[in-house]
Amino acid sequence: MNDRLADPQAAMTAHLNAVLSSQQAAFGRDPYPSASRRREDLRKLKAQLHRYQDVLAEAMSQDFSFRSPAESKMLDVLGSTLEINHALSHLSRWMRPSRRSTELLFLSNSLRVHYQPKGVVGVIVPWNFPVYLTLGPLAAAMAAGNRVMIKMSELTPATNAVMRRMLGEVFPEHQVAVIGEELLDPNAFTALPFNHIVFTGSPAVGRIVMRTAAENLTPVTLELGGKSPAVLLHGASPHDAARRITHGKAANCGQICIAPDYALVPRKQVGEFVSAVKESFAALYGGSVAGNHDYTAVVNERHAARIQALLDDARAKGATVEACAAAGAGRQVPLHVVTGVRPDMRVMKEEIFGPILPVLPYDTLDEAIGLVNAGPRPLALYCFGHDAGQRAQVLQRTHSGGVTINDWGWHVLNHDAPFGGVGNSGMGSYHGEEGFRELSHARTVFKRHRFFPVGLFYPPYGNVVQRLVMKLWLGQGDASLRSNRTADYSPPRPLKGN
Ligand code: NAD
Image (tube, rainbow, N blue to C red; front, top):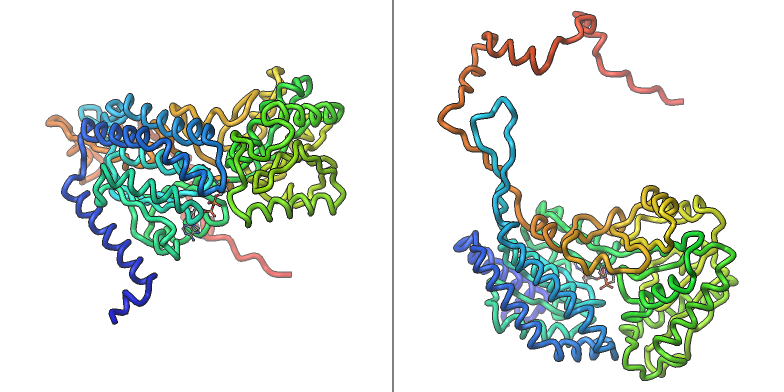
C-alpha cells in the first residue's frame, strides 16, 4: 500500500503542500487583483455570509452544545458584516499609492509607497467566535489582494463544515481553502512557508506559532488573550458599571478574549457593586439559566471542568463564591462572582475565559494602577467613571491592546480603528485600514527624474558642492575629540569576576 495513504498525517501534509502550491501558482498568475475584483470578492463573501447566517448559527450552537442564536447573529454575523462593509467603502483609497516627500537633497524626484499583496496568508482561528475570527482576517487578506488558507479549530467541526461549503461555493481552493479538525498536527500548517500568518488564540500557542513561523521568516500577527481589567474609578456609578460588565462577562458565557476578566472596585463600593452584578444578571437572564435561549453554554466538558476547578481553587483558598443564578442541566454555567480574592488563586493567575468575575477592592488609584501593571499587558482595559483626571491617569499609566470607556468591548466592533494586543496579548493588528496595511507589503518606489545632478556626489570626493552640503547638514565635528591614540577608542576591558 502507498505509505502516504497509510499515514493520515503524511497525507494531510501532502494535501496542505498541494493547496499552498496551487495558491502560490494562482498568485503568480494574478499578483495584483484590481480594486473592482477585490470588491467583487468581498461582496460574494458578504452575500454567502447572509445566505448562510441561520445555518452558521445552528452549527455554532451544535459545537457549543448550545449557543445563543441572537449572540451568534449579533457578534459573529453582524461583526463580520461591519468589517466587510468597511473594507468595501474604503478599499480604493487604501490601495492608492501614497505620495511621500523626498529629502531636500533629492528634491527633483518622486517618492511613493505602493501597497502590494503579500501572496498567501495563513489564518488560524480559535473556537470562541469561529465565524467573526475567520471572516475578519479573511476580509482583510482579500482586501489586500491575497490568497488565504484557513485553519479552523478542532472544537468547531460543525461550523468548519458549513464554512468549507459556504466559501467553497464561491471561491476556488486556489483562492480560499478551509482546513478543519481533520488536521491532526497543527504545526504542519504553521510550518508552511506562508507570506504572512494571522493567528488568533492563546498566548501559549502564539509562542509556538511564532517559533515555527520563524523557520521561514514568515511575519506573524498574533491576536492573543489575557486578563482584561475593568476599573471603576472613585465616583463611578456601581450600578451602571455592574450592568455593563455583567453583559460583557455573560455574553458567550464569558468565552470572549476581550471580556472583562476581573473588576477593580473602590473598597467602600464592593458590596453595592456585587449586589448590582447579581441583580443585572437576573434582569438579563432570570433566576436560572437552564434552557435559557439567550445564554450560551461552556464549549466542552474540558472547559467546564476547568471553570469548576477555578471556582474550587478559589473556595479552597478562602474566597467567597456566589452564583448569580441557578445552573442548567448541561453546560449553561451561570456567572459567578468571587470576592475575598488573593493573588495566589488561579482566578487571578490564569485568563478566566468563562463565567467568573473576581472583584478586587482598592483604596487609592495608584494601588489600582499598580495591580493592573503587576500582570502582563492585557488585550483590553475598561475604565468606568466620568472623572477626566482619574481616567487620564489610568490611560497614561497602563498598557493594553485597546480601551473602552464606560462600557466593555465596543472598541473592537468599530472597524475604522486597529484591533490588536500588546506584549503578552499579541502583536500587530488588523481591522479596517490597519488590516489592509498589515497584510500588504509597503513597497517604497523612488523614481529618478531627468534632472537629478547626483553625479556631483560621485567620486572623486571633496568638490565644492559636497563640501557645502556636508557643512550645511553636518556642521563642524568637535576637534578636541580627534586623537591619534587608538587606545582612547579601544573596546572596554572585560569585567573581572569576583
Ligand atoms: P488555542 O491557542 O488553543 O487555539 C487557537 C487555534 O490554534 C486553534 O485553531 C488550534 O487548533 C490552533 N493550534 C493549536 N496548537 C497549534 C500549533 N501548535 N500550531 C498552530 N496552531 C495551533 O486557543 P483557543 O482555546 O481556541 O481560544 C482561546 C484563546 O484565544 C484565549 O486565550 C483567548 O483570549 C484567545 N482569543 C484571542 C482573540 C483575539 O482576537 N485576540 C480572540 C479570540 C480568542
